[in-house]
Image (tube, rainbow, N blue to C red):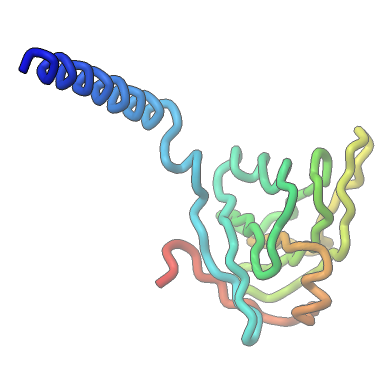
Length: 161
């Protein structure tokens, strides 16, 4: 009976340590740090599952450091109003396609097969027109999906049902 009680106290201590650790991790690393909000960007019959980059931190990080981006997936940068944002490929590991969309979801520009850049003098990628959304896709996606200027996308932000 005594050994059982010692074991119970030991297990309770372990359980307390685990719960305390979980609470500390939850405090220092909120859920938003682990998973980005997602949405859908649909062109005709093809939909892209997109991580949403809304905050300055999310936009600054973007897809930097990612070793791959699966076909049918991307990252959608959203802005409160139409802007002309600059992008660059410094510290990127994969080449990307960019789809530049105005607030109505119209494709106003495309940038294809932009290579990663490890040097300090990386080229700036921007759209000649103002946009409210920028969709980054795996390189070659624009050609596969046959996206062109003037096409329209349906953008669904938030939970997908």
